[in-house]
Length: 484
Image 1 (cartoon, helix red, strand yellow):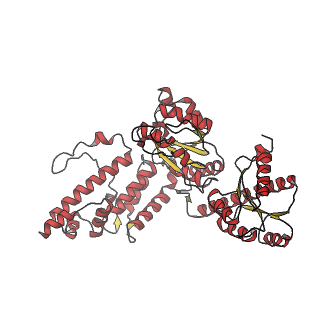
Image 2: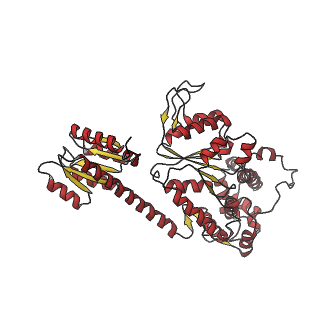
Image 3: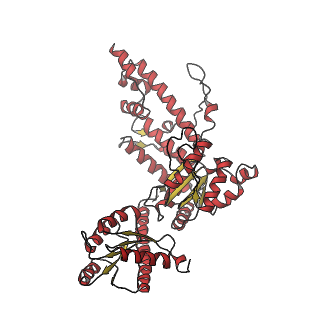
């Protein structure tokens, strides 16, 4: 590969011309001399299809072609992707059409036959223009995000520590560098990964997320790398793995510290070789995937215990983004409280709801060990369950032990099965089971009358109905009993 070829890895050129010899000449020239990825189209209609799914950086198109001519093709390309740069080729008698296309925004034009070096130079400059246009568009999108009060790709807050994270994400996003995102549970590690993807050149394709601890070892391996029909019992068809699904995009390996050592070995190979081998398949497939990993665990300690490969850690830990705890960005608490309160007030259709002074002080003074997720869940629950038009400290339901006995006897011992879950997930399960049992009993006592049940519970009828919908509580049998 020449020095010039090394300057353009992964850059894409589409050549559109009805003459096969001309297409082939340009494809060979640009592939050999510049190492561009070149595709060809024999008509404007086919060219538009390729633009729609392949997203070239530069297009070289003839002006005069059967069917759609180059002028109309250029106009239609602008509707799909206004950042792509187009170079026009003209033959005898079509210079006037090319000049008109230049006036409409085409970048350059050449008359056939042309000088090879001239074309190479023009395409190189066109690549630079496309990159500048796309950087400008990303900057404008970023400016719109930052113009919203305290918002940055889902993040809420303006504390210095959080702004440092924003700045690091912006600087890392355009690269293909592997990133390890570390931080406690509930600090927004997935939000950071999504921001990296949204600000990158891969944003046009969806990011693929893998929740590593949620899958058993055998399933995780087949999901990541795919498999061929007959590779194992139950493999009745070929399956594309998530690495291939994320080709030319981003793959987030969430909570990567929990993956088994056997899969760590295969993952290391993918990161080193940039290729995957599906189960039951002899051949490998190249993949262009940016890998982002996240964890809330002490990986160095796991390495010391032999539970995580040290070489994989260094492959993943090219750059680390450490998400701050809520305690570190405590100055953002008022913004976060305001944001979540308005979000759930709108979601649960309670526009007149207010936060009482004692509730605000409790939220501001509480040590949030579950970080932003715990704060969000607390406000979500309070807006959903709170009675009246002003939420009090009691409506937040904080600091109440779950193990207190109730009138019917001791609470069933469910905590063993909850210990393997995160605090937020365990709390959601307990809250859901409690709500379903409590409301069904209350409605049964009221013989199916929701209004009476709401009064007995000290709640509004609308609040009870919201809970019934949220937790999909079926009370048809209770109503049927009344009807009988």
